[in-house]
Length: 122
Image (cartoon, rainbow, N blue to C red):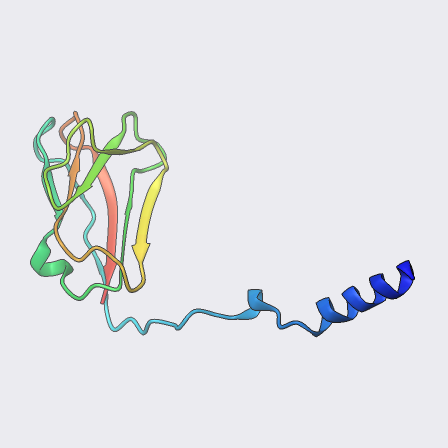
């Protein structure tokens, strides 16, 4: 009886579709733009991606360089500061898909000339 139950469950499991094989709808990127830069004035928020530039974006990516000596703070829709999301050295944030933020993205670091890597795609 037990072996029949196991065989029945195994048959049911093997007959089920593999949902892990379902791929998301791909996004066609017409243009990938580099928006990398550096903090122009330490301790002051600055725009990494403007709302006008980001309109219609399908993804964006920001990274604090791996050799950075301090965090890079990022925020969306408002000025970034020391209480915003922190990216430690080498950390990055990528947003994409139908719910990607398409407004202003700002960055903040305490030190002038702190570099960051940035891309967005449309």
